[in-house]
Length: 158
Image 1 (cartoon, rainbow, N blue to C red):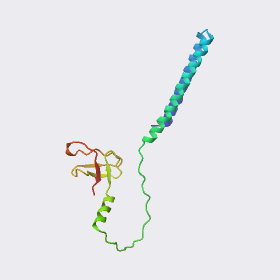
Image 2 (tube, rainbow, N blue to C red):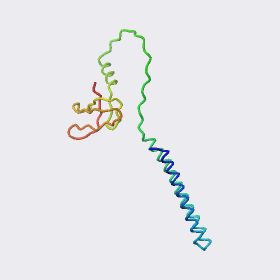
Image 3 (cartoon, rainbow, N blue to C red):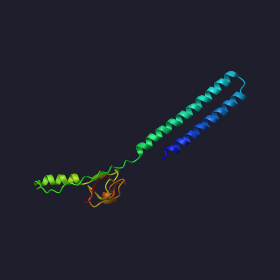
């Protein structure tokens, strides 16, 4: 949404409201003879017109806030790391349990409805035969395993 376009449109609409209010006030002043009725009518026209203009501008402010909140946030890219000196140190031997935990931490997984951050082929954690090919920024679909859709945890295949 172009906010400058919206604000420009709101300014023009406000000018139209003011011109219409002035025309109505002039008509009331010319047509109505009773001073009390004339005064009350002019005050009512000014109050209603001012309320319409205020509501219009308040709604524009809320619309700007809601569109800012709805804009997708792109993930930040990591800054390139400086080259590390090549130094081979013997790695301590890790038990199998620690290796499994480390592999699970490195695996990319996400939920149905979330935006894809890493493009690739993902499979459902419950139905490993159900796969989807995802592009970065797209939302993950529900899994169609067992011929019915369900919310799934999608895991990136290596």
